Length: 294
Image (tube, rainbow, N blue to C red; front, side, top):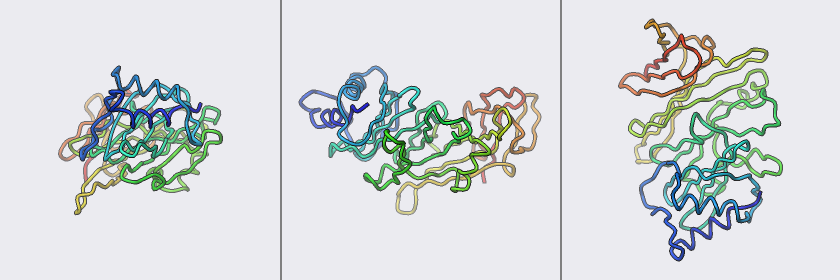
């Protein structure tokens, strides 16, 4: 399907004449929010579906579901059904397309935007024709402070053009990714907390020949300000040493990677000295996991 860029550029440049209500882009960010049934969402959705791309991108495009903005850039998220999600990064001031990213759901969201608005977290998309054993989750970070081409562009998907832009932050190495042939990773996430700047993600693994994902570890992604006032990301891995299982009967047990099946993040409570990750999965025995802060 070719349709979108020309229409989006037209809408951006002609918003004054047509009365379109695109956001005022200033110094502050507006993190991703649902598109709802507003006028702007309907107009952009119609434009995506009825105008041609003027580029090599040929992604299937679906319903526009969310908007965000940061430093002059507009993020438009669309749900393409079985084709995954497609997000457009647009320069609203120059009227240019910066990037188009194809991705999978991360938790219950299409992707996550950091509290400052600068960073997007998303999961790699895999087409349906690949075997499940080849669909091991990879977590990628996109930096909105960078211009077109400055985020790493790679992993071509045949006729669909580039499918990724950004830096892989998990698994940590190429060797970990190759390990997906023997085990498949699943990454789950809750909301990115706007007050603490912290996001908790769960990592489960399915070993070859087994049934059911087993909880392996957690990732703590933090957005912090450096000495110059710029926002930076840090990624901490949490597991055996600083995690405690909270059982439904009130008992507490040491966390052992691979010992709990069917754990999925329902919500995360952020306390002064710990995170409480509430289980929303099938494991009725385990109510939550507490992650002690370093």
